[in-house]
Image 1 (cartoon, helix red, strand yellow):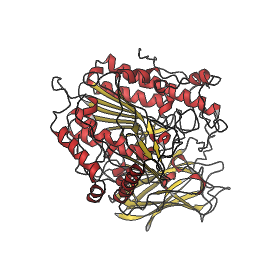
Image 2 (tube, rainbow, N blue to C red; image 1 turned 30 degrees about the vertical axis):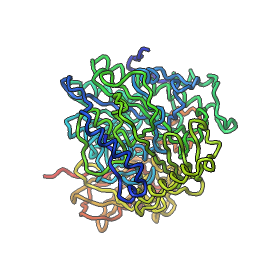
Image 3 (cartoon, helix red, strand yellow; image 1 turned 180 degrees about the vertical axis):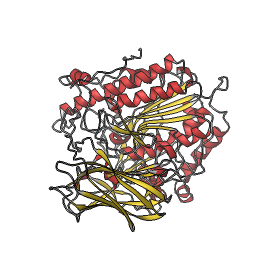
Image 4 (cartoon, rainbow, N blue to C red; image 1 turned 135 degrees about the vertical axis):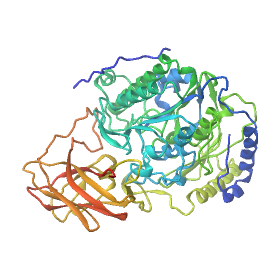
Length: 630
């Protein structure tokens, strides 16, 4: 079914480095001596914000999901149609070697905190392992404390409840979803500041609609706007108008893994990228219409390498890999008032640098006393001529590690590659450069010891999945003051008996095969505010219905029959290629009644006391809504 857009299309014409630990400093003393020298230079510089303006700059951060460095026309991809992103690059400064993590939630944590993700409590991408520790202070905390309006539109992927939620991490406004891997791309179930809402149209369009409104609403005060797209992440869905332009398009550039590249998937990724590009253009045009373009810093990057075999500019690796192609991302920053247009920075940089850099450019203090791993890049952006120290950027995922210097990468096998000469990492030069290889191996060993501090790194599992070596032991907080409702998704619950998730990717699944009164679904919760809570279950069930469901916590319980029966079809979602993810459906809320919860930790258990027909219900999530205090 074709979908039309109700809006008109808008085209856009064409320093502080903080040591991380004593042990790491002792091991890498020469490196940190150079970094400390940069601190002295940076601290002597004046604040980067232009004092001639009447207000500090606005900041917009745009983050793509699974878009590789080589997916953009400006980076040499002749398959791509990305005129707005190409224009953004030409109007601003490009970092040629910008590094993120191999997967989604770790990159987000590093951007938000300026710290390597293992320090932040993030240990995975699902089942609660993506949560950042509450003690971490985010870039939004810093901008909010400085008086900025702060808004996030899109994919959060760093915790869904209480102190982990965006509204508790510095964001006044949140419209999007807190999980990672999302299966809904049209009319998606989302949330606004902790309350369920229905998205409108294609998800990337909907996110930008809300970002446009946020910018317009706050045009008279400084704002920090973070738009976290979930495209071109799978499942591969895109509106008809884009797919019709791409479904038979030639692809002159191909992956070297020709037999593994699925051309329909690549075409859909290109179509999704074109839609993302159009949406970026809409936001840039909004700045122009409101007269805010000169006063706004715009940052664009992606969260990891490309997610499928496709042209990758000859680099080795893609999403999930710690090789160059898995962690190198596009990065553009535009601020017409201060940052040169058309410049390219060759020094290496990464997501960990954005918190210190953007606060320095805006001339605001950073909130929080925890030491950063990132450094302030503003001298590079503002044309300072001071010497820039050599540095190392470390990468980790699924038990694999690498380290990058301006010239070399030491890979997970201990091989050394001269990247300017060998971007495909074909020739190990460790025998020709033994001193360099030894120095990087020593630095990587010290980094592991420092950053993990006794916590085991994420390890690869049989079958290609990635899970921490130890499960996440943190309970889900219930009754945190940030929201009246606490959402318990199926992806964070534990099925037992015959109950199964609808898919192996937990983030956007539902429980099914609930056929016995012995079956249970449980959530490990910690009630931080005692009181009365309404228990609302979102369900689907075929006729005849009538099963009785009970929710219990410790010694209290509440139950209700499932009525009416509700058997919606699976949504098609306009997939262009077969999906790995669960198909989803429109679930119906059912109140089980009100339960009195005491403070403390325990299991919220969902079970059936009576089953009518072959299956009690399919369960998408349970919400605990705290009653208003009298």
